[in-house]
Length: 625
Image (cartoon, rainbow, N blue to C red; front, side, top):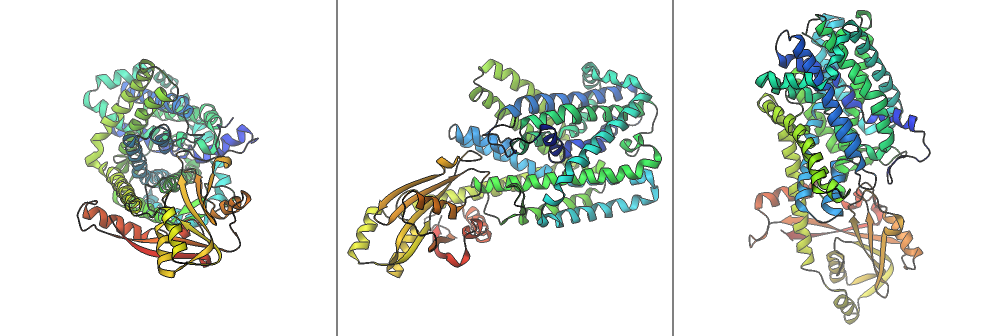
């Protein structure tokens, strides 16, 4: 049964949910056989012997088991924020919902920024590796691999404004065919050398790791590529629920990956050449072209999942106040997750295409891949330790033992991936640092604006007295003033009255608050209080996975006795111009300038809330921070 608060439809058959999950959750980890084993073989050196092949295979199989099956499927997916998983969900659970802990929030957001870094590489390396099969089908087509890769990537991003809903229903069945295909190919390969299954014994992996010196340790950087998509299992838990994801992983995905990696290793043990892409050597020559086509579709699906995940994570960060407002387009009425964020889409496209053109081949790109997500997994392990202590109430010894096991594994992979920095690993790290820097600057700037506003608020009592003493005219209709503050008179309202010498007959002061939970129950969503005759204050609370519906909130206010006229409403919002403080007591000038630039280019709050333009009045004001 899906966990409480998930987006899964109750009553949906678990098998159909598991098939749907194949297309969204397992695209990245499911296409990793295209490039993982050939990268590992390259790191072992030319003509690896049987002990090296079996050792590497053992490391891959046990990495899949320990990180994906144990850490994510059996530990992480049992910890949720009202049914939602992923690093942002667990960050808000531990760093905001339980108690305010800025360090946990900062660390969790850096982990999320790292996902952006490696997320830009996934589409490029996946499509490149899929099309490299053309070399084995028709060697003369090798020169077309890179142009085709770029064309596919550009088309993929160009189609995003249309939404993925129209083709999304086919993702699951296509990936089902993909997993069955790679399982059968792997089984056919393993039959040639059945002794390959000896690698299920972890001693083969440990012996190779500790007897091969530095080379064996650096091989871990290639082995890690088999689990770069493991974080998606946790992040997408809210879409499908834990049970369908576990069912799909245990019943199909994990066995298919085991068979395919075993089949590739068996070919090498049987004397197959290790140059080129060993994955396609599993396939009979007449079927290589259909396999290349299927692999291309599978990698497109994997890329689509990464893009959709980036859109979703961006919206969560915006809701939580860590990114500036961006224009978000709902591409389908079928689900809240069907969205399009133009700025993210085009930036991701530019970076992804540049990576494909710069690295040119998947084995070159593999050198840059993995370091960011390995650090994300390390951060997740730390957060899991805190969750085991505070959510599960485990004692420090039990929680420490479990977390120590995860940290040793994650730490080893991160250390091995550090060797990739000079070979291209700096790219995802720089991307992650850029995203994290934007998050920090925006949040610090927004907090500075909030503090400046709080220091200049007029008390309600003084404002009402001023209305009466100055005989301020009251005009027909309802005015809704949107404000960050939960007390006092909104600056926009104060300025409006002082300049226009009038005020609507009925006034509602509305504050929007994002909760540290994915969703807020309807009975907890609206708080309403009467401040004075014909003047009310309302607070609309919503989760970081929700979008506020202001007109619906006004209708609920009316149902609770508030005299708001929903048919005659004017919304007043503030348009802020950010300036530097003359006393130099504010944030640094460079930070203020960057925040001001983001604020100027952020989507207007009225557009973000989808308020009717003909009923919105924006009042500009200058704020020095």
